[in-house]
Amino acid sequence: MKKTSIFVALVAFAPFTLLQAQNEGGYNESVVVKGSYRPVIEQQTKLTFPAVISDSLGQLEHEFNYSISPSRMKALYEPSRIKAARIIGEPATKLYNNYLRLGFGNYWTPLADLYWSSTRDRKKTYGLRINHLSSWDKLSAVGSEDIHAEAARNYGANHFGNTGVTFFGKYIVGSKLQISSDISYEHDHNLYYGFNDSTLQAAMGLTRDSIKLADYLASYNVAQWNIGIRNMELDAKKLGYSANIHLGDLWGVWGENEFNTNINGDIHYGFNIMNQYKGIAYLHLEWEHYSNITPDGELPLGYVGTVPPMPIVADTVNGDIVKINPYVDFIFRGLQFRTGLLVGWNDYPHGGIDKRTYFFPDITVSKKLMKDNLVLSIAAVGGIDANSLNKMRQINPYIEPDAFGGSTIHYDFIGHARWNMSKKLEANAEVSYSLLRNDLTFFLTPMYSLNNVYAPLFLDDNRLTAGADITFVNDEMITLRAGGHYYLYSVIDNNSPASITTQMPYRPNWDALVAADLNYHNKWFFHLEGQLLGSMVGAGTQLSTSGSTMVLEIVNTETLPMRYGIAAEIEYRHNRALSFFLRGDNLAFQRYWLWSNYPSQRGLILAGLTYTIPHK
Image 1 (cartoon, helix red, strand yellow):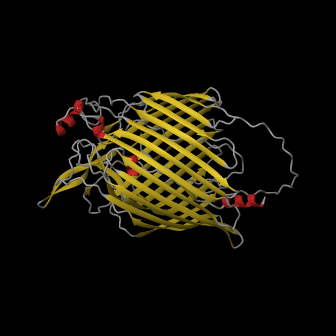
Image 2 (image 1 turned 180 degrees about the vertical axis):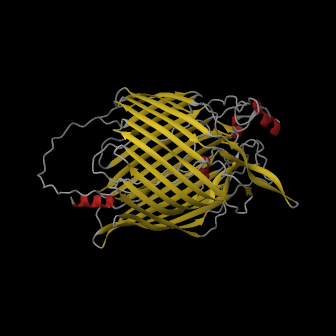
């Protein structure tokens, strides 16, 4: 009973544990979520994610930072103790520790997903996951109804694929030490298909039949190994700790290679303040290292090199980022605080950020009002992040193979409000202002005559974001969500070769989402979602004159129109072992453009089944 009480206290007074989600893809945002602990046993609400647009264009990914601040409600009375009762054992229920999902869609799109894990064991857990998704069709004709006025043109194949396998395991040593590890391999590929027949003929004097898919293939392999250790000490006034090691190796078809090492850990200690208030002190340490080798041979179709021409020579570049983050979580007179400092040392040699030490605030203050139904929060945070080749190619799959990244520095000032209007209705609103240096975006590089390959572009800018959402949940049978964001960028003149005078390239000026989920007797499941993404501007190059010197400038080019999309999914669960699903993405059949010169397919329909083998 003593250990249990102390555990509850630790959870109650650790208000702002940060969880890192996906990396940016096109744009970033920070979301601070505040929630109150409710002393009831509930089923976990199913997380609803935006629909996946499963075509070669990929999708814009969000990077979310969550701050969750639970608090403990005090009982008005203390019940009398009762004697322990003997519980009659019940027969073990069947476990469903595996599933196989198979599906197939138009554009020759196969889907396979296999998962298996060990069954009940108090000491260990281990398992395996294998997944595959690909498309092997050609892009249909693009006509004059699109953003270009030219008649229908052939863009050829737009194949893509992703295959991965992961082994994972966890083992508890004694009663207070947990060791976990996973090893994975992933292969994914796509084509630099952003050129049509007329461009190919005009730029290189070639026809579609005279080139091979391998001439403009982007293919990557990633091998990763993670191992971590943490103690499970729950008593107050005792040290808790964790340590993790990540090793990752990326190599590509054109000779590019990137090796990443990340070592991080933290120490925490619970304490009392004036024998009345409780808090937890943390110290987080992290070292991140990258070693990049550039290609030294052939590059994708259309490569013309630099001006003046320079030979392709393999080069190795090393970069390091070190972070030290001490902070304290505590509650004082009704206010919840996270107070700390992030010290970051940068030795990532590309992108224009100085090799020196930077200091960032790590402060969040939260107050509960209206019987905890209204939570107001303000925060001042910041950090330094590496834009590695592996990160950049996931944001933009059409990046040049020899691209070098750079670190981004950001200071974020956030105001957030969460209002529980009833047990079924919740609203959130947030305003943030960010100062960014070396903010990552992309432009079409002139080093490729087909105008279809991107290079990273780092700009200094300020970003104002305003967003809100509202969620209605009716006994987990019906869930309705609606929300959106508005983004206002101000690009700073940092004496770079960029002449960006409007919004940031390939960043939407607003987005909106409406979604509905229906659970009908745990037998039929329906999901319907509508998405809107505001217009974006592209970025390319032009020659200009500076005195008697010709200067190559990066400028805003065409405007990519607003994207609208509809996604839907239906699942029928025949029994606990067998279910069937039908999924549709881009059901508005819009020919949208997330990247200049890369039109999408018009819609995807995918059908399949999931089967599970029960075990005793």
